[in-house]
View (spheres, rainbow, N blue to C red):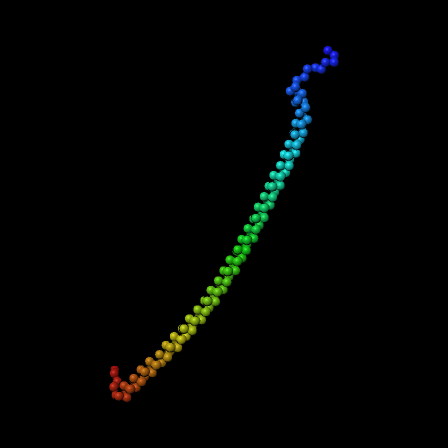
Length: 128
């Protein structure tokens, strides 16, 4: 049987033709997997950096909020102290006026009592 080709299995022949294609596809799949893994790693790095940046922004905002609250509290304290001083001064002025009025009334009452006693003494009527 020389010159006659051996019988071939058409399925085996087709598979042998596809082997290089499958080898190339495996290589491409490995490349794609590596690219996807690198992309995931980059995405994780970007997310981590974004989270760190967001935390820094939040920390600065909180520091600013505390500074603003501190300034406002200081202004309120100063305003309160000023109002306190104003009220103390007004109270002292009123107390001085009351004392002066009381002193004047006491002097007027004492003068009236002395005049009344003098009138009684002059009239000869003295109560004992």
